Length: 152
Image 1 (cartoon, one colour):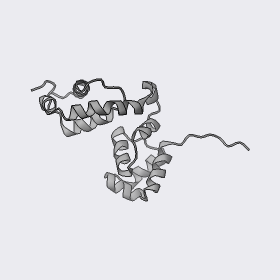
Image 2 (cartoon, helix red, strand yellow):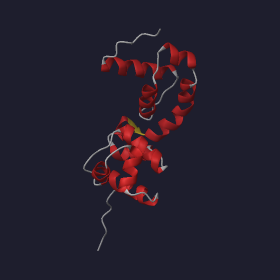
Image 3 (cartoon, one colour):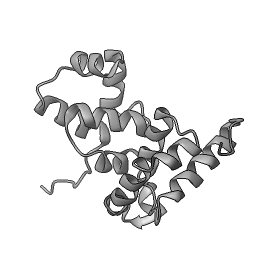
Image 4 (tube, helix red, strand yellow):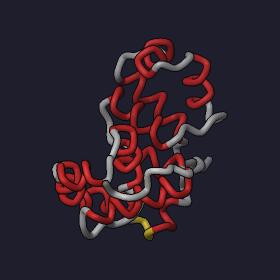
């Protein structure tokens, strides 16, 4: 009898990593500041976590977040072919240059929560220069109606 080739779901992958880390759902939830029921819903593929939550889960479980992001959003492969993880690798130098450019960060009043969002967004596409992170940030601020759009 032929076995079917079924792909592992995000929930199954997270559950396996959690178990390999020796954590209960309750302990993982506590470390993330969530309810145990939320972890259960995610592991049973009844709730899709945000990119930010996926990044936090990966950090607690000490695993790479890119494969989880691809499992969570299969359409992401279509955004840039199937090179999502390679974009993250290519963007590391640009990201380091951006977060160490104190003048640029101060000029645009970049907040810590904005840096976290940009860190999540950087895996989606290739960034050719650090200033492109500012363009992304300004677009997000405009979208969200942030009044402080201009540099100081």
